[in-house]
Image (cartoon, rainbow over all chains, first blue to last red; front, side, top):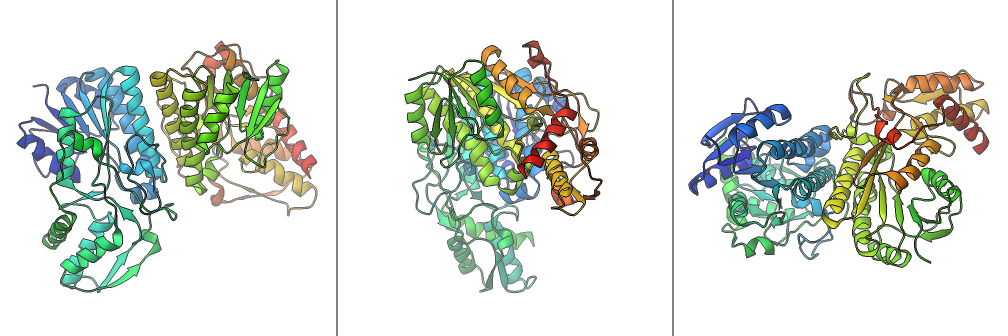
Amino acid sequence: MTGGTLVTGAAGFVGSWLVPALQAAGERVIGAGLPGSSPQRPPDEWVELDLLDFARLRRMLSDKRPDRIVHLAALASPVLAAREPLAALRSNYRIVDGLLRAARDGAPDARLLLVSSGEVYGYRPPHSPPHAETGPTNPHTLYAATRVAAERRAQLAQARDGLDVVLVRPFNHTGPGRGRDYAESSFARQLARIERGRQAPRLRVGNLEARRDYSDVRDVVEAYRLLLERAESGGVYNVASGRARSLRSVMEHLIQSSTVRPEVTVDPELYRPHADDRTESCGDPRRLRELGWSPRYALEDTLDELLDDWRSRG
Amino acid sequence: MTGGTLVTGAAGFVGSWLVPALQAAGERVIGAGLPGSSPQRPPDEWVELDLLDFARLRRMLSDKRPDRIVHLAALASPVLAAREPLAALRSNYRIVDGLLRAARDGAPDARLLLVSSGEVYGYRPPHSPPHAETGPTNPHTLYAATRVAAERRAQLAQARDGLDVVLVRPFNHTGPGRGRDYAESSFARQLARIERGRQAPRLRVGNLEARRDYSDVRDVVEAYRLLLERAESGGVYNVASGRARSLRSVMEHLIQSSTVRPEVTVDPELYRPHADDRTESCGDPRRLRELGWSPRYALEDTLDELLDDWRSRG
């Protein structure tokens, strides 16, 4: 059987939400994940594949001939990327390069939705206007540099090889299932542990003045689904709320929703590397809204669900 | 007056050799450098310009309308780039992005020689075959990632905006005037200081097993001159000797050429970050040789001149 939508990173956080969302819309989904991983939501077909095995990747694309590819697989945490630059470069640049070569040879007509990051714009002083897609990229971290390199590589594949590439730049997103390496999820996890007496009543946090643009992961996967249908070929789309929130306000909401009132300890080790005093990252979602996207989740509700999720993860 | 060849980074190490080489070939050279810098070899016209000032850069290109642009300005040391990632991203990616936008608007017919780096290929186990331009890029350092991002951006400008871009990937190069942040130059500097009794007879070195492909800076600028004339538009060209030498052999030659026999102290702080056990970087110069390039300098002579140069810098 050929055709359908291939989702890489299908066993990851966003993949776990995207796979059922596509299925609910009537799509046949082929999920790909690392050998040994297993999808939380079963796709119609499951493929175990190390994306760095370019020969196998090429064969897989030639065999399956997907109509659409959503490339989620990445080392998606700027903090982890700074700790493991080689792994970040392999995951975020080298694999995109290999995927584009394999798609050119094995699935040249597929629409390829390449998930990049709002981090490519860099940081600005608080209360700057949101980043529009027409503005310059200005990577401030190794993570952002790997994403910029991959974006340019993908645009080159569009311009030179005629691939149908859509670039998407999600800003921060979260929700039930988010891993602990992201600030808001770390706050929620710690609060759930403090509630159970499994952690002393001290909340360890990084730079609370950082201002980020948060969306619910379910609104993000709805954006990806829409973009597969409606995006302009070669287009670049932010996925963002358009509103920056300080991590302090995120933390305060979570503390209010918890049953505890811990002491807050700022740990400079948790600061994002090289963010200096420009701490805001906020995206303009106008282009995406023009395609009909409209977010459904309020951040406060998402954070409450995230806290409940950590309580239930035990 | 319009036309001529614009050289950015004209006051730097390679610029100091390129400017007179172009002039000797009958070219009119406009040199650009940071405000406060001054060219060691005076170009026909000198422009002080912060390349991050994109409005001024655009005006300058529209005014001067150069026929050719050689973009040398960069943070060109992988070691410094690892220490100052933000500066490296600004210098090596953001400025290229701005330069390509400015060229599109102000000098769309200029040939643009963008100097990248052999580092984009990453490192391999010793005695691997040299890297050819057709092989994949595999950045192992932040420095290499900034270069890959810039290369893809430039290829996009070629494919999408119709700019005449040539990419050049020099491997290691050295010669009189080389700064002290490069291993071979640091060795030569230390030996000159030990000879004068200004440093205790201990040579501080990094990873001596690293294997690099060295050319003389004069052969490198001759390659750039040739590429401006003869390169295929959109082409990518290594500048390399095709032969990997261990830093140990480079050090041993310099010690032999010096009048001292210092103790050698290996300092892991001087190791290139994230190079792990794949230590070789070596380029295949075939494409460049097919254009008529033939290097004139033997590495041993270059190293002796570098040592003499440090002796005379006092």
